[in-house]
Length: 463
Image 1 (cartoon, rainbow, N blue to C red):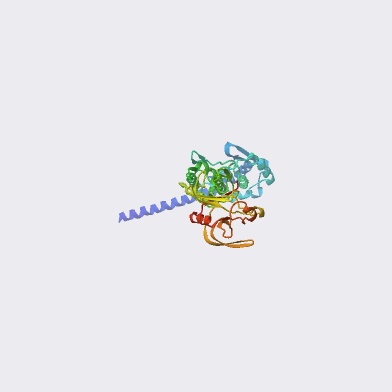
Image 2: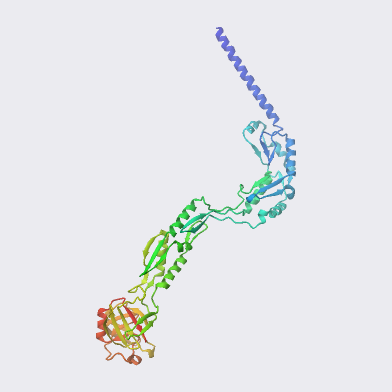
């Protein structure tokens, strides 16, 4: 029984002690809270002024003193600094809002200040002359100097490949953001503004660490890895990165752009060098003279549009290959002489035609060509047989006739038999010549027709 009574007494004593402790804690908490009715919490800052544990009156004076000696220090790139003094912009303490500092905290919330900073901002607590601030900002060196604009990461072609060149940050400021940062700092009483930390500078969009940088570099190197060997008979033209790199640029989005105009110009240069249509050809005639034949439609001709498109695709894939260009027209041979030893020779002066096959004379004989006195002279130059047709009706101004062997080489101009003629050669063509065609005796036209193939060169010239 005594044992139970002791336990009850001990339990009662514990309860009493707990109650006393709780009351004591509450009393202490209330006393401290009462203190903070007239003082600021631990770790408290108001508009840039540390007022921790200060009385309201003391804090008010500290804020006034802060404004009197206020200077905003601007920390700029390249270790440069500048200042804006409060007196330069007529910075003042707003007396009308001074009382607000007394009501910014609940005294019973003081314990939280032991664990976190209490930074308060009272809007318009400080006033300043906006025009003076604008003038002061305009006078700052970072506003006046010729700033270096930022530049994205760049790429340099060297020793057959591309390397990345570091971006340039420069010192150009973002004006609106810069001005806003200054105003905010002044209004909050902040004494140091780091332009870098506050993102007041313009920044490059792409840097060495950007994901796009590696993609672009890889693509550039793929393009310059292209090696195209153009084959022109025994001659070659090699296109590789040493030329292609000059056709590449990287735009503001870090996209690689291939200059299609440069590609077209390259193909045009190949055409000027290797196209043979209409060029002057040194030719030894059957009469033994060596003459120059200019003009005509026969020869090699690169299809510039088609080849430019294909070359563009070759570059985008980084192709390494040997190839011929796409031709709009081909000759029989490639080289110094693309005529070869199978051709038709029409000597307008001699009014004679020869047909050679593999260097062997197959047939020759007199002909009648176009009438020069009526403006119908047979065209000169190097052409080729477009096709041949057995049995054809020819028509033109004032005539219509049927021939057995028709071999056109320039529009409606061609070689054919002329059953209505009884003689050929000589001076006939000057008075009774053709409209431009080459009239040949039946046997001669027949022999040529039976042996000639489409594409065979036909050379027309005057000595």
